[in-house]
Image (tube, rainbow, N blue to C red; front, side, top):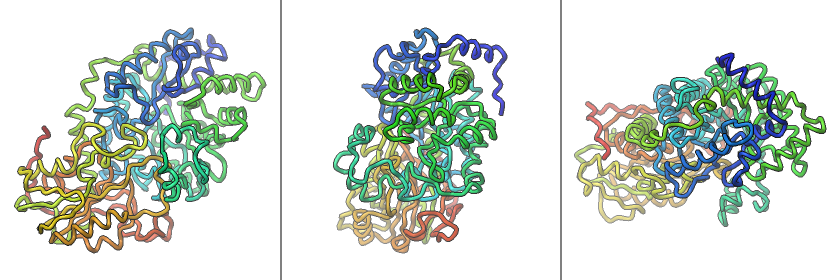
Length: 619
């Protein structure tokens, strides 16, 4: 799709290119993390972008403080000699998820289960409004990955294993971020990621972390992963993420490329390159795929941004070659979170030595300026401060509740135990996750890895159940399931530990011993057992599910636990359908032509429960 820039705007871009020095052009190609940026450097170096990494929040972490922080960077960029407005970026992957108080929507795996493009479009619009309220105009989303090995820690970032469904939902989200037009005051630039075939990486091919330790990894050291890191490595962390995709070209083109084609046809102006490799060649150095296919064959007119410190992996110990190879391959803006001056000096030296051409630099900067002009940043570098009232507003939380309701997938329901009868004299609720907002949000929530407890405002599943039953005393919450009482129905809420990226890679996908012990206790004390699983992917439950009367895959629903309770209690119907195959055994977690499944894509029950009562309001 040709982006409809006016002749006046095209002339502006060419004029700026003609007036800029080489240093100013390289500045536009540089993206630094906000915690590393020294006062005055945005203006001195003409930096093109600043980002907040996962958890890169101001203190205090409030929408107002976010806006003040971002506005300061923008104001400084306008004071640079070239005066080009800065573009601030964040990982708003399920709402403006770094900001305390923002609406946190279900992760993409849950949205895929809704199969509802209109809903995803509205989520994109709500996210854009909350992001723009803080003066951020760039969202590192949507991920259009098609995860093939469920052990991958980014599985929940994928909508589905169906390329057509991924394309439809990605385009809807892009349309939501765009709103009335890219140049509208509340449009937010999407970053379609991670190009390409990151979902096809093979187990055991990741080289991100030395198996002997992580002391040389600056990012993980800053994340304070601590003593638990060795345990996670033993469980399979950093075995898949950023690894190699060994698939053939036909599979790459038929399965993994279509969402990018659809996104480009929808007018996207940014794509993020993947850490991963294809057949042994790192994507950040893959000129054929970045330049020939993406920019040539697909006609992409926007700019390619690297992932966090990703170019450093191309030639460890030879930074100049890392820089030259990435830029020559087609990376236009480089995310250098820690040492941006090193990148600037290195790229300048490579240009002056003739290893990177001036034409390649001009092409990169032209693409970056095209996106900034398209967003209207030159006319309106700041958004309306009144938008702050929309962050976490009731209207957006209502959309999130709708998304939660539509994302739940009912996979077993013996005797129609669900929806729960309003006449139950008492309901046993067990599992710490039932009252754990952090667990139901998952990773990429306030911090990179996410966390437990009330990390941000919202409602838990337990709170929602108490509201639905009307009499809180009828909902008996026993976190560990230890009770001497007998119940007609017991509801156990289980959850994966929060994780993100390669920290969530696992050798096996199974319920933990703690989960199994909880289930055994609850089963003994109830006539019928309902299990709700909060997870970023299907887990192998083939041996356990025969002992359950009902099973609900609730994914990672976000801050609106009311939505889960509403469906469990019949205030809204089950309508979700699996977007992923559910593996039968551990041998089937990596999807192949011979994999066996407990349930296939599209599975999901819709019990008939008579008239649906109206939804109760959230206080």
